[in-house]
Amino acid sequence: MPYKIERKISKVNYLALFCFVSIIFLLGILCGDWIASLKSQQLIQNQQKLSLELAGLELKDKLIGQKDVCSLTWNEVWQEKVELGTRLNSLEIRYGKENPDVLNQKEIYELLEIRTMLLLKEIKEKCNQNMTTILFFYTNKKDDPLGRWEACEDQGYILTQLGKERNDIYVFPFDININNPAVDMIKSIYNISYAPNLVVENEAVGYKTLEELKALIK
Image (cartoon, rainbow, N blue to C red):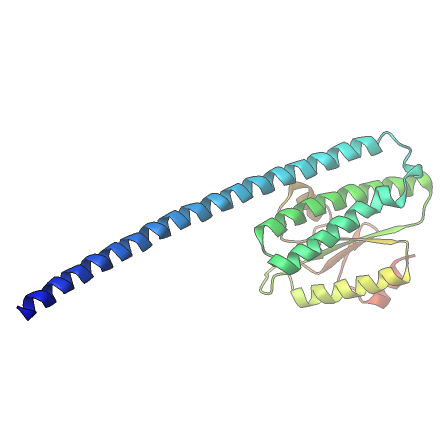
């Protein structure tokens, strides 16, 4: 008799364990589906946001084209780049430099840089203003066959110091690993294949110290 009671309890335990495992399994499937659905919704929202930002840049360019470029203010030319750059830096710190959403934002930032660069070129030519643009190609990857990230960080510090000393210099950083037709065209024009690399006065000059940069810029 004791043996039969023990066997009965064992079957109940097995049944309870089976039910428990089945519930956990179903919950896992439901949770996985919910997470996948959430990620899909976030991806769609991010894509819509990126499309809106690009459309906004295109419309702003058309509106600026209706004005005399010599009458443009600093806010109209440069502030948007600074604000987006600050936002991108915050995203990199929060989510990491290789996060897909961060890279999407970086691509928009670099398109904005090209737009600003072309606008400054027009201002320089039409308004007789003395300014120098520097294109800075860099990499954030530690084992990147396209360049050395340590040297890129050092070059970034040098450019920051140069900007503090002179207010007529405009620096445009570009991640060498971003694949965008417009950025790829710039890399092709200046034959950029490694980082760090600078383009000063329409010439690729590679890595430069602060003193070397000062000597290059008139």
